[in-house]
Image (cartoon, rainbow, N blue to C red):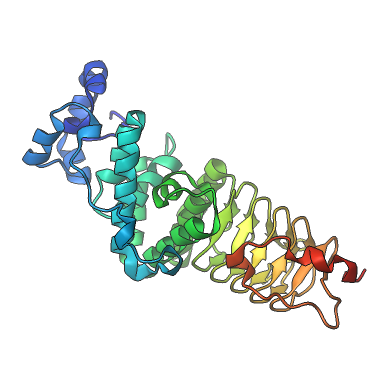
Length: 348
């Protein structure tokens, strides 16, 4: 079988691809199996695409921020608007950078929905010579389409990246390039497989996520929605860990156990928590809602809601008896250093 990575319909391949690769690609692109799986452009689309370059594809709707719901208040109910926005952003980027036109068409513009685009992209990211992208595409699409709560989480995670990370220039940028976002969505599918008792497949997917994205989340771990894994490299989350909604976790964070003991042995993180880069939280401890963990901290005990823990071993800002209270929701505000003004009150 001819393997085609990020293949696109022949009518939408620019003249360079047709000239250089037509002898190898054309049989695959016109094969009934391909048309059944990925669809085919209509006659009108073929006529519009006959100009030769993917930059001449019919303009997709979306991309008009003047009619957008507030990004800060974007909810799952706005999925249709969000998908139009993503297509509009992809169209804009294809117009401004023709080198990306074929890539953007195959990953976003050729798909009819967000779940199809995400399934296609993850399938190509996580495939290997023995774990085929077509199998993964079907797997991701089936699971994402069968559980609306998963798509709600995808929308919430896209919103989280766009609102909290100033480096996130667009929703499409996050969808295609943010490995923390992609690892999280892949984990959601692996977690669903784990709960369906399809554990060998869940573990195989877990292994591929770790290999490709350098993010190691056990498929049994439970993760809420509105999650930002910022940078994401080196994140490790253990089997019995739980993460609430609207949390932000930076790179090289570990939610681990304390030894070889089995059972419930990993941290429980509440809603709206911010965990700084390089922080390590060990054991079945509770990180309360709205808490903040400073970068590089080692947390071995419970952290009360709306407090800040820093250091190695971590201690509470303001002292154990009357710790200072966070005035914001750290997981959403992304304020890593507000506790510095109280450093003189830090109790050793």
